[in-house]
Image 1 (tube, rainbow, N blue to C red):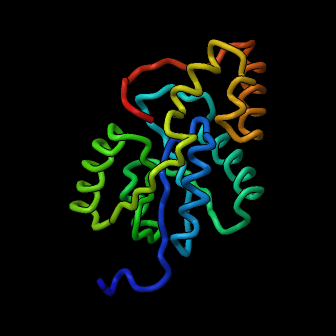
Image 2: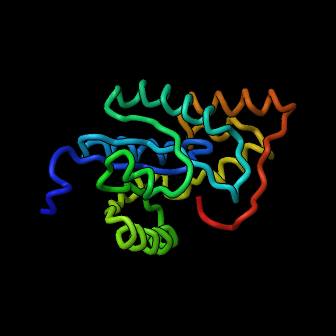
Image 3: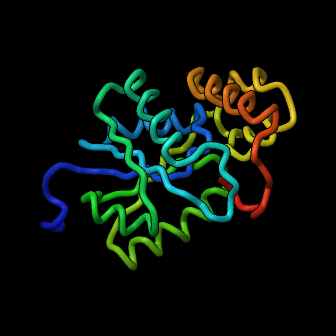
Length: 184
């Protein structure tokens, strides 16, 4: 074992989480049993239009995880490269959920790069079968053009409520546009 990785095992679960889905929550619950410390790292993707600000997402996720996971999971925001933030917080692994082979192809390349440039390993968790088709992009598309209540099976109740509030506050429209054709 590499001496610099002795001690508590910390993992970073990065994403935009805009919004957080039950699939994300499933990965967090399962990941927290694998590591001594799990940090949900809320980032920003400039190629995507945000529905919620970074601060709004951090607040929602903290509230949700306090209910669902207790205080064993931390939430933090970051800017810049994920591997730089992982090093800053002492993470020895990046946790990623895999829904399908498309995710795997993308994540595999990223994992190899992260290991090569930052000596950070990636741990993949296969999504639960009921979450395999869910993505934040799909959720935003449905929410922007239809009845948000239809999303109840895909999202935690707290996040669904906040999404409704956001849509109402914006006069029934959400700031969503598919701009990059990449998975989320």
